[in-house]
Image (tube, rainbow, N blue to C red):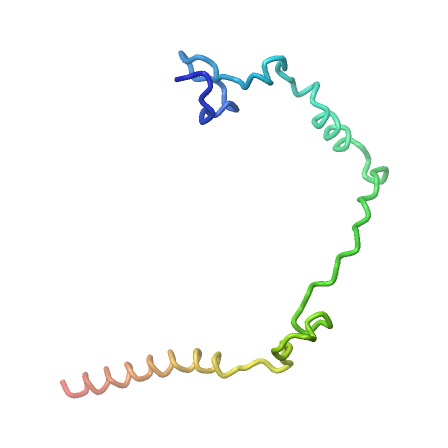
Length: 119
């Protein structure tokens, strides 16, 4: 395998009996970083062991911009009417979806009764 193969995963340890993965040239001067020296690990351990009442407050959120909606003033100049949300949703599809399977089951039951009563 050529040493400059970028498809090789360099995050895994080398397989037994195989050469270690080739690192990019800009990484050659960097040595292995132990978990003790990693600043993120040190900070995470310090925060995990610290009392919660002394933790810093979360950063203040930036006020969010209002979402552009079809009924907003920005959309007033459109050639279509603004979309409105109805207070009473259409219920007939749910009634149909509920009653249709019941009617099919009852219909098959009646058909079976008629079929078996003639035997």
